[in-house]
Length: 226
Image (cartoon, rainbow, N blue to C red):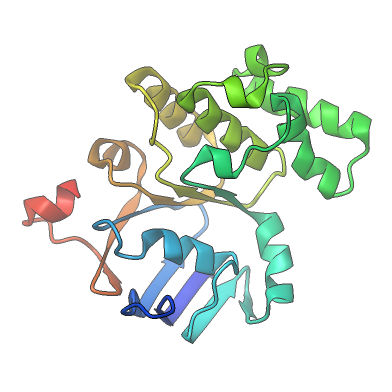
């Protein structure tokens, strides 16, 4: 059974042409599914539909064995599917790194002491303890990216959704991110323009084009490198 499945999904923003025209996608346990496509193709839109931040005009969204419709149906999905946004500043809003990482566990009912234990365990796992007490908005772009991953992993999700995770990363931090993601057991949907990153990490790639998802043509250099 797929962990996440989209069937015949259609979506358009108000007063704009449709971006999805019957898109189909399924994520199996253990997969690291990469999605590529040109700017504006609807890749970020797809991730937002998975967690119910946007609602399709047609089609089915099935997550963890249940079809989801209303916003209330997605509360459980947002707990079980950790979403790392394209811009870390959309996700980090607490004064310090420790407080940002603790925010999710506290919202899930952990005590303050339990949340701090989770913070330390998560940061140690990612080799980020040196950032624990840093002021979040003073971090570099690459540091913010790794901290956003920590905030999501602190909630122990079953699935990771990553939107352009190599944005703002230098070569060293990108290599560190690849190392971290390869060590994780979670299934992942990864939106990325970075072919090198996709090749190192993905178990399968789909290209979003003209509102549909399909395996890229191996003979098309543009599809492979977009």
